[in-house]
Image (tube, rainbow, N blue to C red; front, side, top):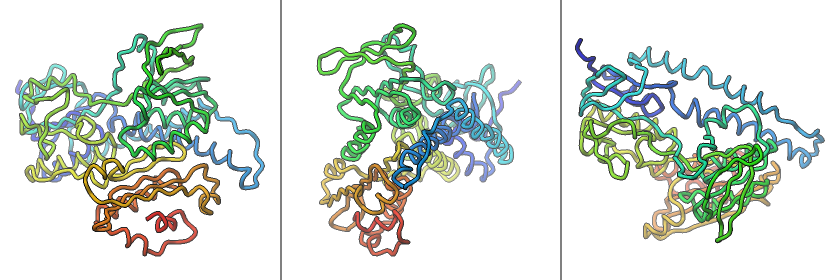
Amino acid sequence: MSSPSFDVVIIGGGNAGLGVTVATRKAGLSVALIEPRELGGTCPNRGCTPKKVLVAAAHALDEIAHAKTHCIAVAQPKLDWAALIDREKEMIRPIPVNLEKSMQERGVTVLRGRSAFAGPNSVKLDDRMIESKTIVIATGSKPRDLPIPGAEHMITSDDVLTERTLPGAVVFIGGGVIALEFSHVYTRAGAKVTILETLPRLLSALDADAVDQLRAETERIGVTVRTSVTVKRIEKKDGRLRVVFEQDGNEHSADADRVVNGAGRIADVDALDLAAGHVETDNGRIKTDPFLRSTSNPNVYVCGDAFTGSPQLSPLATYEGNLVGRNIVEGPKLKPDYASIPSCVYTIPALASVGLTEAKAKESGRKIKVSATDMSSWISARTYAESKAWAKLIIDEEDDRILGAHIFGHAGEELIHFFALAMAQGTPAARLRDMVYAFPTFSADIKYLL
């Protein structure tokens, strides 16, 4: 029996892989998509989408907590955690089915199972060999392994979104986005939360002042945050878990019902047998050219979380997948541009960012103007009883272009797109200041931040 052959084989059915199918199928290429689990990958099934259901519930609890400020008397709310998890699962249940239908309508062949390279233009899927002119690695990411004695007692964010019992106490090992977002949910639901981070500060890739604002608010709601720690071991103690760690030369411990791996995620490429595909790596990272193509095998592209040259963001995965699809069809000529890609940490309130941090802007050698504004006392913030409202804008003094924006609170997860659009279009800061905004809105405050 001859091996099936395609123009394009995509390993991974998440946002990146799905994005590749758009241009390739429009051009009439034969496309196979290989995915061992639900179509959609992590984001809609085990990540962003279900997580936001929990975050929305925590938002509601936060609103209720502020009811007294609005002269509303309410009883103490009680969250039904099991019912919330059920709601989250019900919300995401149709997604993989709808994606399956979409792929059928697009004419994509969906194959199930785990695959690996069998040669520079072939993959092995279980006991089948599949040939392809072009192969795309879009396998996404997986939780980072932590070499800690007792690590087997930890759970991942997947489990947080599945377990129907609210724990009394939670320890996150690692102070990344996952830890911060879930800590705000757990704490408002009534759990005691501790975050242990090995680095001197949380979220080291984000603006330091913005992260300081987030940390202060996280501690204000009752989360214990410890940085510059070394976790020594996780052990069972009296039916619970104990995390033993060292800080400032002293040994400490934190007891919990649940210990969560909050150390982030890494590219899921270990099982692909990249050597068989003539795909070279450097310290586990696939070597790529500016067009997201393997430098050692030009018939292989990489996109999404499997590509380690960009932040692990769902919209970026789709963006890169679309670029790869077009490069396959039109030839390698499109390069990703990450300069104006917004991102959010969905704590309550959220921290939104786009562009350069102040430190990176200074490293670039530009002459910059930095404005950091505490909006907590502004009438717009007080009207909605915001616990914290803060923003930092970084502007190039020579051409008045916005280089970076960082907003904590004040609907920052929405306002950040004003700045992203201005950066993408080269709109001067003065143009945003001169705009007429609907009033009273949070958007109307933008002119006073610049």
